[in-house]
Length: 121
Length: 121
DNA sequence: CTAAACCCTGCCCCCAGGGTCAAGGTCAAG
DNA sequence: CTTGACCTTGACCCTGGGGGCAGGGTTTAG
Image (cartoon, rainbow over all chains, first blue to last red):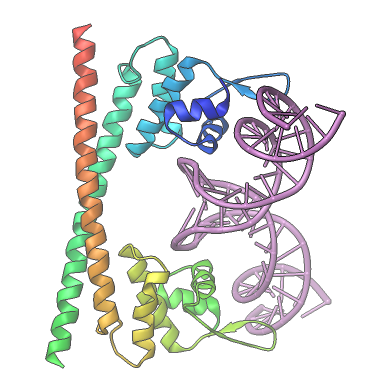
């Protein structure tokens, strides 16, 4: 299959597929005319990458998952490295939520303050 | 004062000051040799921009605050436009926290699922 | 006079692609 | 055989808030 078939099958753009390749996540064959050729397993890989990116992982962080797939597993997240990556991402999200919660409080204080100042004057 | 004096006084880097200028937040005079010259009021502006950026606003979104200062107000956040910007940012943060909370739940589910799959096999 | 310390502009880098382009390949209809 | 539609390729610029570096001009102190 050609790149647009893969992109359509996996629900991403052609541009995204080429980007994944540039990140080392795909290594398609090339036809004589230079066109990239993909196999059915690449659809699974691209879907997985898409899903992981939507969870906020970076392209680099999807590496262990893809390796897990390539190692012959049905699921990308059953390898120890994948579990570690999940836990790291959860910790990251928790940290971010804490930061934003604190930020929210700061903003609310600033807003209240500014409003009070206005009624005072 | 020159750019490094301003940067030191406001607690930012020289690079940041030049970036703020490129975003239209500062319009320094130029000496004959091309050096930028700033007044004491610019220190206030840069401090304000720095504070607002740390609250997660974009450089563009700091515009109303700076205008408020330039209009002669002692505080950048007492103008109606500033209050609106605060509220918009709070809403944005709330949305982001909700997103991340949902994402956190998804990740926790995936992790549990992957762990169970492993003990099962 | 010279060296340090400052200033200038301009370029490349991040991240995950989006947009656009010129060039060339492929396949069907006419 | 040619035209047109559609596909592919690589290459370039863009995002936000600067960091880092290059290569040059300027100023100030010793």
